[in-house]
Length: 368
Image 1 (cartoon, rainbow, N blue to C red):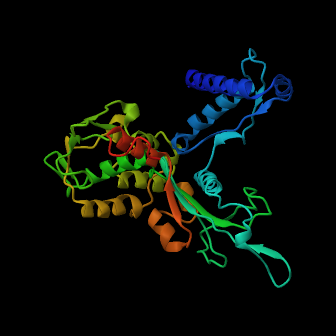
Image 2: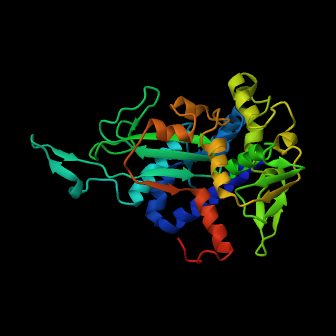
Image 3: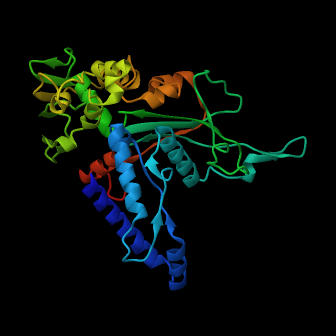
């Protein structure tokens, strides 16, 4: 851990110093070196899934390295436990929501959205867009609420001004922000394969018939990353670190206090065909399955995605935060709350899919 963190901080430090040296004049450099540079370093879902002891140790180490930079360049960096930490899924979603609305020019005091009321007070309405941000390990859903919206008592709305995420002069904005672990592009693909190919309806004679893959597609039965060649053949990366089930399988371990001391969490793992008492390699394995074949039955695919990922019987593992915000599944979000705002789908997971299509010349290279 120490060597990995040290290499990461060295790269970040070198990049930061290069930017400062290129952007500051000599007088500014003297001032900055005297005052020091505050550093915010936050992690998202990929780290939230780690065991608590590992996550805490990692950030203690990162903060130490930031506060003790190399003296060679003369810059001083400093941070604290609030600036350098793993952020919650709700925070991750709010940052994406604010960024998206800022870039699309929906934030601020647009005169076209303001009027003077009968008392002579200027009143401005919001024209904010909601966001579904799909990352690698988690997905965030954030949307603004209309004035007067009544939510179930278990659901908590966030006021962006009260949380100091927007200035008071902006129109007041109440939003719902919820994050679901295991619903990022990588994690959801691993979980989906594990659950689908453990179902006798789809697993026959060691062959898993996957309705979400085109008819004729074939790969070995693994949740490892898949490389599809231009001729249509596929190879699976057998490196444990590239297995899309690894984060979930690591979480679903009897060595994790969240599992060993909380029966509900263990039940959620077992519901998704992962036995926490087995070794990691077996938890990532899809039992009795050797080959996955595509059937191209996309109506069946939709129904399985809904039952496994969107509206599962039990909350997906590691989703304590989502449940505490009032939602146990994506399906419940849109049943218990609603919005007339446009919803924009974005995130690293979407970018990866676009880049794959570009690589295979199914999209123009200048597509953005």
